[in-house]
Every structure is written in structure tokens, then in C-alpha cells.
Image (cartoon, rainbow, N blue to C red; front, side):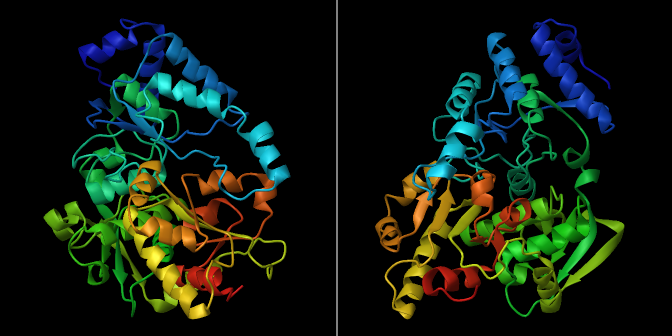
Length: 425
């Protein structure tokens, strides 16, 4: 790898042994992917994927302490993924015991480490750090050092920033070094599409289901999606951004997509159009039958496939302010039609602390509370990692949560039916 004078000096120990190790880590990571040089991280803030104080993560705590003791601070403040615990989320005595004594017993200790390293503030815990309310929204063209897959794909695709799908810890290493290796999605060539996806559905496709289908087909490649603008329009308004947030998270978790282009909508597609498509790109046609095939392919891993759901999680990734408002109205309408006053399945909506704070200033907050829905900042995935919670019949419309846990996927409409009427099981 070709290094400039500053990078060589850091590698040679000009800023201390620990900083030299940080630079070595970034360089070795880049060399594994054939990077020829390092480029500066230009975003105002960073984002860390490791936000949870799992008892078994001693090596991470030790590494963070070395950075703190050496005074090696990131020049960027950073946000982090959601907290794994919230006392307001339903759990029984044994589940709570496992959470606090055997799983996340180091949470307070680790959060203290994050604060010393440069956490933005106590509420900067969310997988959707790019929400306006949170304040970590990169500009187009910014070079990032992120690892959270749903945030990476959103930043690349919707915001036009540049970031590879890095691993955890590499995110803070790049931020501290101030450089990341240039390869993959940081390059013009790496951002070109090798798949054309043609949407030919008769109605607006479910975001999480469509993202799942594309992710499983193209895997880590870049898709150029045609026909979706018919349903989303040509402006990245709140509704379109919320849709693409969920769509992108599914492409990233059900496959390994780090960037997608939506014809006529996302910034690079609007500017360059089909010039983004590589010669010889493969074609994937998605119609109603294909989406149904994908839906039917999902395994149900509940011990009792006919069990009555005990919990519903919505918001993986975290919900937007607009989604909290629109779901409040949908739940109220459906409850009224069913003759019920409150949801019939314990239901948790998750969102960034800053989004929840803003939501609580609106007329919608007391209305949603009246329906029995709990609003939380928790990470549903971290909740489901508790083996006792994993045995529960939990439903969700998040394909990311379905992929990584025992939660069972349903479409938004099916979820609404179940939590307000107790319909389909």
C-alpha cells in the first residue's frame, strides 16, 4: 500500500505505539481487499456498531481501555447502535435475570468507555443515526468509517455518501486513524450496478419483502432497480426515505448489499441514470408471484408453529417519526373497526431516543400510548438474543429481525390485523 508522509509517520510510531497499531490495523484491512492507498474520513461524525456490554466481550473492553489509556481519541464524535435493554419492554423474572446478570452485565461499564472515547451524547444509541433528529446525517460524497449494515446501505444509497461494509471495531479504527482503505464502494467503479432489477408488481411491494428478495438474489452486488419510482415517486420525501430505510436493511441482512440505485429517485441514479449499469449486467424480474414465492420460503422455527404470538416488535431498523405517526393512525383505525380499545398482543415500537423525544411533543404520543403500544429505544435483535426470549413466539415485519432471530415475519398489513384483531396466526 502506498502511504503518504503523515501515514508513514503514524505507522512508525510518531504518535505512539497504540496509534501505530491502529494504523497497522487499517492498513492490513485494506491490503486484504487490494486497496492501494488510504483516503481521509470526511464525515462530521462516526457511527459504531458495537453498543452492547455483553459479558463475553472482554477483548473488546480491553481494546477500548488501551485506546482510552493511551489518550487515542477519535477526532470524530460518534453515535452507536441501540441499547440492548429497556425496563419498559416486557420480560419476566428469569428473562430479566439473564439479561442483567449473564448477558449485558457490563453495559454500564461499556457505555462509560464509549463516553470517554467520544460518544455524541447519552441518547446517541440507534441503528438509524442518519435521522434528522439524531444529527448524524452524512453529506453526499462524505467518506465514512461505519459498520452497521442498515446504516451503511442507507448512507451509500439514499444519501450518496461512500462507505464499505466494514466489520465492527474497524469502524472506530478508521475514525481514530482518520483514514480508511480505498476499495469497493469508495470507488466509482465499485458503485456501478451488476444487476438490473425490474419491478413489475400490481401494487406497491412491501419494503422488507422486496429488499429480502433482492438481497438473496444479488448478495453483495450492486442492483439498479427499475419501476419502484412508480410507487415511491421521484422525490426523497419522508415516506420514500422510510420505505428505503426498511428496504435497504432487508437487502443488507438477507443478502450483503451495501449500495443500491433506484431509477429516478436515489441521488446517483437521478444524476447518472443507466450509465451506472455495467455492461453484461444480469436481470432479475420481480412480480407478484416472485414476492409470494420469497414470502413462502421463509422457515417458521417456532417450536409450535400454531402458537399465539406473545410479543410483536416493530422497528428494526428503528422507526422514523413519520412512521410512528402513520402507525398510530393505522392502529387507531383498525382497533375501532375491531371494537377493541387496546392492542391484543403486547407490541413494541422501537425508535431512536431523539426521535422518541420529538414524538412525545406531538399529539400522536398520548394517542399511541392509549392503544397499549410501548415505544422503546431498545434493539429488538439484542432482546431476542436472550435464549428465553428466543423461545417465545414473537412476530415482526422486519426481515432483518426474522433473519437473525426466531421472530416470525409477517407483512405490515398482517401485523396490523394480528395486534388489533387477533387475526391470522
